[in-house]
Structures are given as C-alpha cells and as structure tokens.
Amino acid sequence: MTEKKTIGGIAPGGGEPLLSEAVRWGDLVFLSGRAPIDTATMKVVSDDFEAQARSVCDQVVASLEAAGSGPEHVLRVECYLADPAHFGEWNRVYAEYFPPPRPARTTIVTGFAVPDMLIEVQVTAGVPSG
Image 1 (cartoon, rainbow, N blue to C red):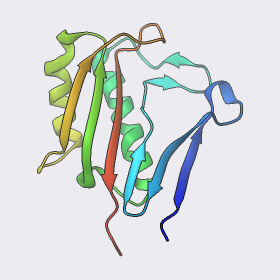
Image 2: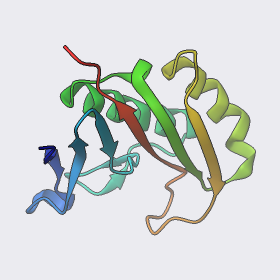
Image 3: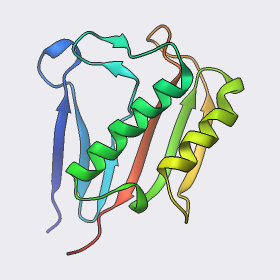
Image 4: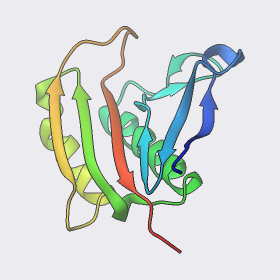
C-alpha cells in the first residue's frame, strides 16, 4: 500500500514546522513552494532577481535530492513572478537547473505577502526506482 511520507519541515522563524519541504507518494514527490527567504530571519536573501531565483532553485534541488530524486526527474514546474520583466531572466536560470527534456511549466505573475520577494517555485517530480 502506498503511504504518504514527508521530507523535512519548513519552520518560519525557527518554530515548529508549519509545512513539509516535500511529500512523497509512491514514485512521485511534491515540493512545497520555495521562496528566497532565510527562514531563520524571515528576510529575503537579496534584492537581486537572479540571486533570488538561484536561491529558490538551489532549495528545490536540495529537497529533490533528500526525496531521492533530482532536477532531471522534474515533471512539472510552477513559477510565480512578481514582475513580468523578469520572465527572460527566469528562463535563463530555469534552463541551467532543469535539463532537457524540460518539464511541463506554468509561469504566473502575482503579488506576494512578503515584501521584496520576486519569485516562488514549486515542483512535482518522479523518483526513479532502484
């Protein structure tokens, strides 16, 4: 029987984890949205878009590895941008982290509850057998 397994926990401000880094169900892993936030200080890591995007992608890769997967197994990427002007820069960073064949992807422009946050990303990935 397939069971839900949680991987890590995100504890904003250092308290009790509010959400799981990821949830694994069989050979699928679902990551919580990754934000360019230092969870100890609750501050945005940089005001630079590329630095924020790389912070988010590095977090995604670390969580995938903890779940037994990797960027080459990502099936879907959902990206939220604060400013449509960052779309081209996001494409460049994205292409460095997610190798061909590329995952399915959605990019939405939205606002964020955290001031100065420019990007958030969540992914769904497969977990290879063996």
